[in-house]
Amino acid sequence: MTNTETALKEALASIEGATGAALVDYTSGMALGTIGGSKGFDLNVAAAGNTDVVRAKIRTMEHLGLKGEIEDILITLSDQYHLIRLMKGRGGNGLFLYLVLDAKRANLAMARHQLKRIEADLEV
Image 1 (cartoon, one colour):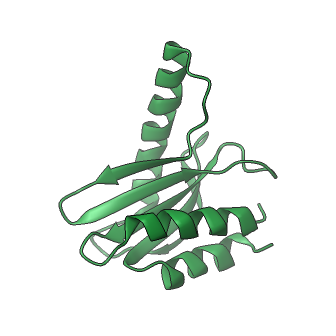
Image 2: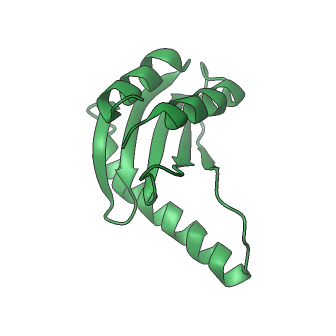
């Protein structure tokens, strides 16, 4: 089991092309921890904004009567990938891991695989 800071550092160090990571509470919109980002890319603002994405998808699934669970949400920009992985189990309800990737350097399949592993090890 790893704590939030260790898990976020691992995500940034071990996932090819990762430029930022955060653990976010989508009920409040608050980032519980962040690492990376830049002057021009505030992870706290991005985390808060992405709570709206998660809430909208959950609401849409409820309206459609879909019973499945969201594993992750991928947003592709011209030069970045934004990966949102909803946490399950062990107190992870209402939380998601948020990963920002450089599109030129990232391997999405590997990033998803590694983020899933990091989520499984994370103690919240």
